[in-house]
Image 1 (cartoon, rainbow, N blue to C red):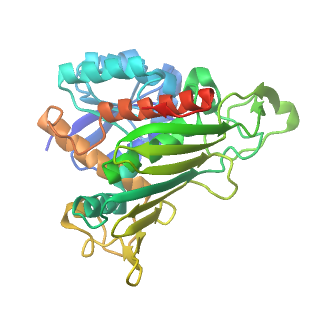
Image 2: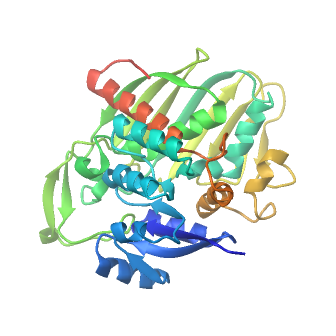
Length: 381
């Protein structure tokens, strides 16, 4: 079998996560790695066991590279995705798809015109029990949706000495916590419920209005601490914490909280969806079980087990019940669907995976949340 050759661009936290997931697919070969300079690309490629290394312009010239994974800082997503599409490459892009709606809209248009496979890495859809909740809702088991309560909490920016490029608006955009992790939460919300968010009311808070920027490189989630003379004071304009009220197209409402300064919460997305028949609750730090609440009977806990979930969910489960699957498996399961489309040669008419259009949708919601925080009032989506 001839494998699909892939080039991965960027080697921060998420680039190697893509590489590890891609290597678990039988029809894919990670053939090339790209970084900002040839020397850095060569160094990173050697460390990751990848034979070929390039700068971005040279990567696009490689005729045997079929698809490109964009795993760079946010401000590069638009230009690199656009160039890759124009070079005839299928594209998997990290979120956010772009820095503004105009850029995202252009990418959606170019992708549609080329017919190339396009995907945005909203991998948290691919926890099996997330799809189980979606399937149960589609089968009428949840009933009419009354409310959604969600949170996404982390502590990796808890101290004022914690620093990363995501704190700099010229690299990440005007929103941080909402755009970074809130976008996952909003995507999963609409994915599971089938609802559309129609208006938002947001309240942001910047806990650390000044942070100490290391004068030496520190990688995402590394937890490295430097000495006082190794820092420079930097004013922070993006949010550490956000609360957002939501209204949906079924007339009901919800609320989300997003924070990157919640001590002890390493990477926790929590959902509670209440319907007219049941309530579902799920937590990404314990992703192999979901709680089902009942008014007139005993509550239940559903374990992730291929023999217990609906048939539509089984394709996302590799191991038997009790053999836990987690975050790395979500990317593998998403890429399985993406690369089935790439093997077929073009974007499916009704993709099962998140696309550039989904990336545009989440950017739209994030923009409206930002606008609401500025205006201190409700804003229509």
